[in-house]
Image (cartoon, rainbow, N blue to C red; front, side):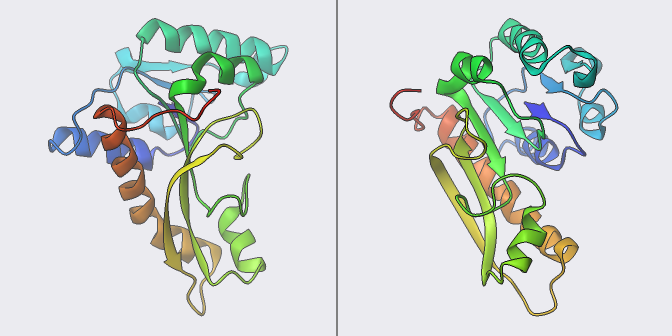
Length: 189
């Protein structure tokens, strides 16, 4: 699992595993930010982190990250709140098992600040998407989405808070399909 922030999606996965609602194990949690809260949600033996800013370029960091992930031999590589763009070599290496959860109804609002962008655009609904990762930012084929209405008076924080439980449920639903062997990568991945 790749993380950069507080780790609410990671925690939802951990809770589902502990409660028997997801037949999976976490092989490792990897971050580009050594001080991110998400890392504290798992035992030290599962953590790998490096300060991505200390590397000469993205390819050097992604190569070391990729080697660390490969050493764990995961069935799936899940970007859950990972805020760093992955280079083409990394995507090619893991593309047939590399998915991302993104807080918007892709293809609308790729990138950051999606909740505010949905409000600024006057969207009537907002949501989250799980998609295959390809070299282009948030442009891979969508696997599944969840939608919620944008309510009068919503601000970005309220919209984000209302979306989060649905986002967690969406990711868990897709992961259940993945671990059951019912999720196939798009052609060419």
